[in-house]
Length: 400
Ligand SMILES: Cc1ncc(COP(=O)(O)O)c(C=O)c1O
Ligand SMILES: Nc1c(O)cccc1C(=O)C[C@H](N)C(=O)O
Image (cartoon, rainbow, N blue to C red; front, side, top):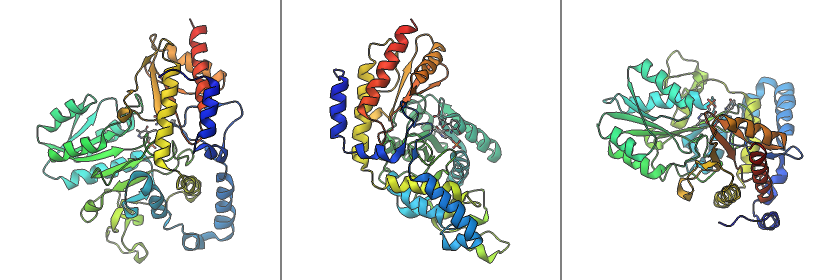
């Protein structure tokens, strides 16, 4: 692709069907924010809603708000708002806890769903919390972890032994930005009798996801990156309907009980994904997420994906001769909404990211040598991408 001029980028911005969303976010003056894959930007409507929950629902209405303000059902209501973003039915998604905790719950549940097998397959290089939680679960339940190199060939070899209960994978890799073939990998795992848990942290809000059509078993994901729920916003859990009747998660708290207000001494699982809830959530954090999900309900995911690909294409073409190695696959079906570039001098890449931040371009560095730039299509313009790329080229030039 021939790199576009800034004027050509400005013209594309005038034709962008998503352009209006930028006005709905608070963005610091003079900053190009390419770290929305770590912490998404703040929707302008969030502070007022959070203040209302604090002052009115909590301050004035107190305990009545559990029913009058819908607090009790908020994990399901928010789950229903996430469902269309991930191609799920409303009763298959609940919101609460962190991605790490939800991975723990779904992994134990998936192992119990496949009781004759005791091997969990993960990939080296997956986000550390996925690897750590897997280690914790296999120790706890007496299973075995088999960690393979990323990619379908190694995964298939690991599955072919016929003893794999569950596979845990990231839909988009946090480090390289590689997008996995969710349908193909899920089918492969099923062919070998394994279940699949997908971590959607780097794909939800970045591209359309079809959990139902791909026949995914379980999925988890966070809401503070592309979904703009705020720092530490509650995560979500997807449980396919076919697992509802039998799946059993291990943190059997009262919010996952079928009749919590009977206060009985015996645990009876709630129906549907609700069983995957455990205890009370922060309703203040939930209010912030509710605002951003209302905004997300107006987003056309096809337009989002088209813009994401255009922005990452643009960035890649503008920095093609900068002396960095592209890590993120260029093939559209393999690319998330980020661009990762390897610095030839490894750790020197960190100084480049710092120098860019001094020029108002915020990206991040991931050990040992990757400069990582996330492209959140709702609030980034083509001109921002142009400016960021030029800043990177200049910084690299001045760093020799
Ligand atoms: C792939 C992936 N999984 C999980 C997490 C985070 O999990 P938690 O919200 O529990 O900190 C992140 C980011 O921090 C991530 O990138
Ligand atoms: N979740 C984070 C946190 O709690 C503190 C600092 C950073 C994060 C991140 O989101 C890191 C991010 N998952 C990554 O892909 O690197």
